[in-house]
Image 1 (cartoon, helix red, strand yellow):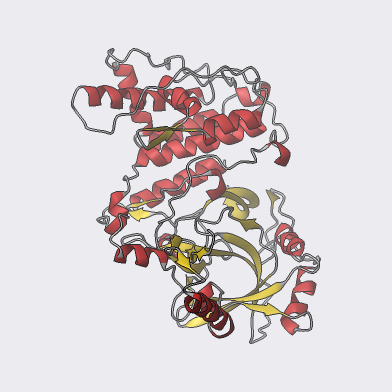
Image 2 (cartoon, helix red, strand yellow):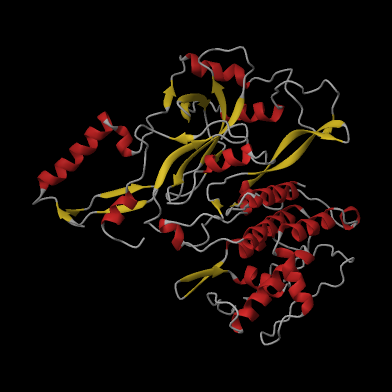
Length: 499
């Protein structure tokens, strides 16, 4: 750079870089920039990204001291083990032992403790947190953090200590994209089960903190089973014209719930479909930059459920995969770039288009049949879609077998592999298979059949996690994030017990 300098302004939406300036000839400008940064740090730290609603607690503060006894084990904490309950058991609000344990583990010695503020209509709720239990990696993106938080009641009411899950995130601010809290409020109001219970939510700051990079680019005119229960939840949301858009392993959670089973109350683990940040109302027009993104259809979300099932099957069930970490990286993290367009990698593309991956045979054949029907109809001019380039020959893989084999369901011999010859039209059987993933009901029926298959009792052994922390890839796989990403608004929401 020599005698020149640049000013780089970065936030969660991207970065803006100034032109190069000679600091010897323009030393007044250089000093003025440093002076303004110093002034903002002292008088308006929120301009530099600081959260004005968060208070760091001193160890002598009563709020700091309140967290330590709240984390101590309590005799009335509930064991989360699944079991039949007595008629008088768990009638009152209770705290699960694993929740208090999780809060205690966040109170790391010499780690700062904070009081955070969350909007609740015209009021504010206060929560006490220490170390987060989840932090999204990378400089770009939404900067999501998750905390096990202790609700702080300034009125000192006699109600028991309440732990909640608090989600802190820079939400994407697209026209037509609703805040996650609004979606959860609608789902809760419709009594949809297996979604987080919303306690409170809102945008942070007065005025609300927002990233500035998109505004600059606009001015410059630049172009811009738990699986079953969560599948049922997705179906109920779809009946309300809501589609999730972000089905992933990290968004399908487990939690213990008291249920009535044949007249007996039981405590059991159920699924929780979370992170409705990218959900949309199907019947609402897509506005602004959101309209430029490809629409997500029902089949896309159902296929994502399948990949969650596949991911955990390879991690926790017996198979002939020699290296689960290497295989998962090849299937889920690989990608190809053809003419500046991103496509799935060879592993996933080959499996889903040929049906050669022998995991959950019935579902995979259905997805493979769907893509064969889609490609054939496109070639016949029945539909118009972006062409997908052919897959190159796969590289040699000495350390991983070509197929992952779990027990087949021999009760369904009618399913067969899809032909590789593109000029052969889909058979009536293949068109029928494709319909299995066009609607929730056939998809859920297949999951139900697989769940009660006798093969689980005789041939499949559950294993410990086949992927250690050392075994996961250390590099970030996939495309880099566009530096001119969407505008983001600082937001906290309160699902689950609180998010």
